[in-house]
Length: 284
Ligand SMILES: N[C@@H](CCC(=O)N[C@@H](CS)C(=O)NCC(=O)O)C(=O)O
Image (tube, rainbow, N blue to C red; front, side, top):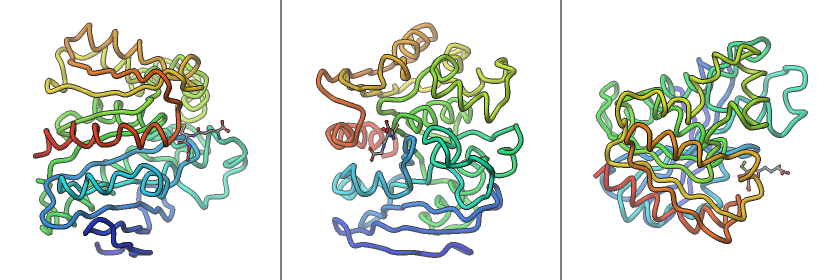
């Protein structure tokens, strides 16, 4: 990939877990990402968006997705969760806003709007570059792409999948923030990145976006897994709001609730194979 530097690669289940760095035109910063490359031909690309405080390494280290991805012939892209290396006052004072908390949208408010452009970064820069690299034909976007994410990244997966119809063959989420416009994490992020006019927030709220669909956008179904011992469930996640919105537009949704699971990566590792299978069905 032109202008991209391979920082490290590690042999993993016959393929390679790689970490890359590049100068992003969209964020104006240096960005890192992880890329698992399976052995043999690549059937599809699965994008995993991580949650608050995570980096491009978290999923690769903790989820244990590589074994099944290798078997299924899926490449897995794990971007970082925000720009880093800027000098915006207060950018790293909170763990739920600023650095490590990009919310996968383009900020419209100063001082964030210049660099905090995660939606454009992913959709217009990183994804096309990685798709072209994997299929070996630059500029031909043909490789099918699935999108998944956890928590803030679950919000990113659901909203980007709804905001960019036709770009993703499949979508799933783990303990996603389903109604950010009405939870503390989302309200703080939207107020800071999008400003006080709440009418602009619905375009980045998965439940509002789903409720506004004329018909089911993913007729093959969306999968969500949610732990019932998740410490953030009651206050932050609201899966029932997304469930109601899906039902209203006839969107098939498999929402699997797990009695004892918490919010962390032990839960993710426990259900990751089911998510890879969900995507492999659509990407195959
Ligand atoms: N730092 C927060 C927790 C943040 C958190 O749980 N982040 C989730 C995503 S929302 C995560 O995946 N953390 C990384 C990890 O568990 O390795 C706290 O102290 O409560």
